Image 1 (cartoon, helix red, strand yellow):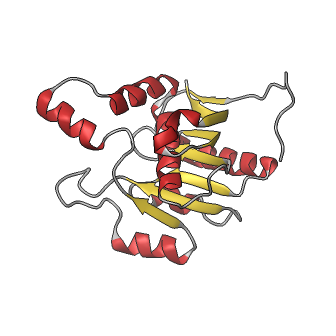
Image 2 (spheres, one colour):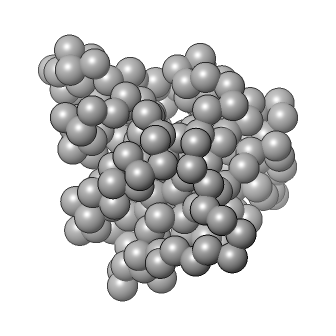
Image 3 (cartoon, helix red, strand yellow):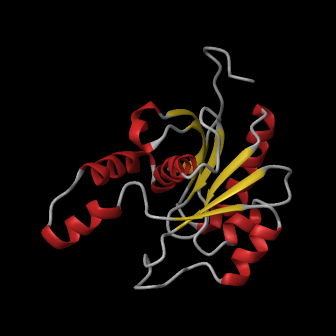
Length: 191
């Protein structure tokens, strides 16, 4: 496995603005860096499946992590059944489940006010950008679901709103050992 030598500096792509207009570049940079490092798996946040589809066809395993059903409204699944079937047919793994930094904590905040531990961690990670936070969160969720192997480095893509504007190299840890997660590189993010 390749790890940069101590003192080696890599340029991080900094996008002028966050958002979906960075998706094509973020995916391209993520795929290129994964191949340079010999990483076999992309973990991608993709609610509708659009960003997940852009990650196909590069010879990498693609793990798509969506919003949980009900995120956009009671009973609403943001990924259409046809898109889910297409991604699965092309070999992507899809995870639709409760968000790591939300879940019951978010329900308590909405109902009773205040902040709770998961949301504090999420807000702290947002200092690096929403997409970086999302990439970390989705990777831990994928590990907890058994869709990636423990100890495996992955490249994760996340975004601000729709699309992808951030990519990172990390080794996620299970949620019950979350603070063991290692972020090796930030490939790209908004400024």
